[in-house]
Length: 143
Image (cartoon, rainbow, N blue to C red; front, side, top):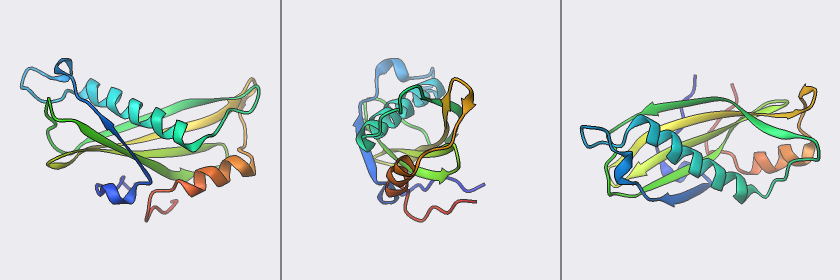
C-alpha cells in the first residue's frame, strides 16, 4: 500500500497546530492519542478549506484511520499538519496527512471517509468528485 508523502510540498493544505503539555507521554514525547487529535484538527480544517457542504440528508463517516509514527515529536514545538486527497472511489475517499516539526516529518495518517445517507453508502456526485480531485496530494496514484 502506498504511504503518504513525508514532504510538506506534496500537500495542497497545511495548518499550524500547537502541541500541549498534556500531549506528552512519560518519556516526554508526544503520545499516540495526541497524534490522533492533532490529525483530526488538521483534517477538519482541511475539510473546511474545501468548501464542500453535505448534500441534504447525507453525512460523511470515518471508516478507517491509520497513523504511522515516523519520529519522536516534542512539546512545546508546534506542528504543521499537511493534508490532501489520496484515493477517490465511488462513495469513499482518503485524506492523507503528515505532521511536521522542525526535525521533519514525525507522523503520517490516512483517513478513509464514506458518503452515506439513511440507506448506507452512496455515490459522490460530479461536483464533489471535482472538488476532491483539485485537492490531490502531488504524485499520488490511485491503486
